[in-house]
Image (cartoon, rainbow, N blue to C red; front, side, top):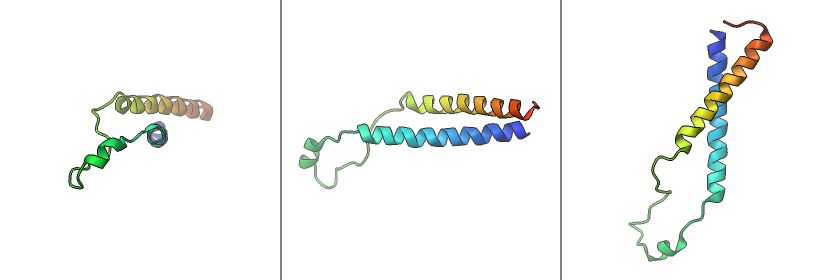
Length: 83
């Protein structure tokens, strides 16, 4: 049961760090289109980027799961028991 708790905890930590990190990178790389905002009326301005589901939505949980698996295996091997 401890192995599952270690895996879940490390998965959540890795997923949270990857989400925050990718959000920071995407925010830094975002270039707003200011030409369309001058023409748009106040009622039609949309906030946020419009895009479909990208590969990043599937890639981050996969990376987090692999990281969590490696961390939990390393911690369990160090403690000397596998259950």
